[in-house]
Length: 616
Image 1 (cartoon, rainbow, N blue to C red):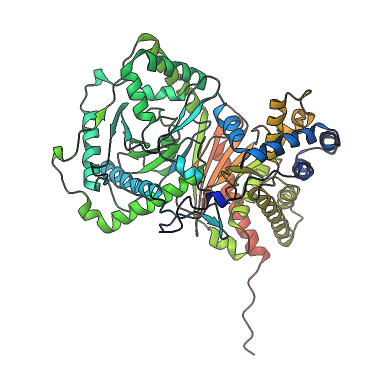
Image 2: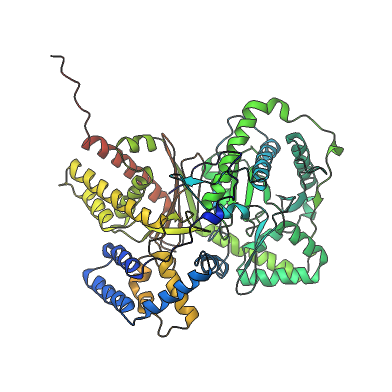
């Protein structure tokens, strides 16, 4: 379910295979509904399931609404190589009106560097590595990613840099400035831009980058407290329609504000110097997720954070680019940064005279009473949202993918079953569970839902809690659940799972003015199974790297769970809403750790080592 790390190569070119990718498939209607019904089985009573069966049967019958809506999709697929691409971007992201902060953006924590670095040193090294990645991308020196030898769509990589979600009333738009050459830097609500390139287009050296960044720090720290900058960035956390209105007013009333806003929106990306020194990854996670809400332009494709003690992390906007694409970039940046620290550190930071690099540009803002009030209101509302979300980080050190693979099980599927067992133990039931799968085997493919909760996973959870069951019974139930999950994951990656197809049918019904609204979408089972963004347990594997991150729960009574699986450990993050008295991400994480330990003991108990051969 995760993607391989990117390595530099001379060929083939990054986007060379795009046209050869197959179109996004239109699944068979009957097959989609069969998959959907199978996912309902473990979540409904027999009576509820019979009702949903009847609803689905009516939907797909000859002359029913389903076949008409299927024709709409099939006709659309004749005109669009990816019939879902625009529909997904608009309905899942651009048309949503709630704040980007917390609800949409995700966060990441970078591993420690292995040596002590100042904030300027760490920022300069990461910036140099990020610019190397961008140059390789611009020159198409990054080879297309592959899974089992098959190429994956690389389109999203073209949207990583210079991209911003622009607020508009009713529906936002995505802007990408691929020729952008400047970086926006935040510190203490001050915003600067600088261009890390020479006139001949060569990239600044690490020493030059450090000199430029130091100049920004000096300028942002030399002001008096009574002349603090306005926290304009918090406006990006507003309800999208409200932010669109405020932004339009700012742009129309002030040329200064217009120039400053556009300087940030057209930047390659944002870099934020946080004025804190987190002592743990838990603290880094909290700061990157939201912190105090300041110095974060939530509309930007990604922001890199550097703390006073050299630690690092990120916050990224989800609309145009899925997390694993950014993770691939950050994985490269972190590896290259570590290489520089190890091999070149002694020669990287030669002291340069102050005039060795051009002075950064400080962005200015003009305020008026209504704008000041908007900033104050946005700040208070964001703080309330920050206060409502909890995130916890757990470093599971007992084992990792090496142990799991020893028992011939897929590491990701194994952790998914541990998550199912965790929820079952805490809440006495199994619930609709989302795991991120990708469809990048197809042209402009994005994501598809892997529905983790299955009849087999429920049987596994019940077997684990049944004291009369033997270790062999439990291990067999675990293997069956993992096998079922693998089958569904294969469906998702091949574009034949049910969620995107069902959403497409729902959109087709809306656009076609279908009346009455198809009962399959008003049936309570649709929402209970996760439809319409209602997965109680929202999970994602960010790969097999030391990077890890997280996100908010999808529902108010749900959990978020994110993890990365290394050879000998698993990095885990959990999240929940404080306003829900039934969920607690600390308890969930602790229970997950216990579940992972129990599964380790189960594997060992059910598979005792063979006795040594007889000496006779």
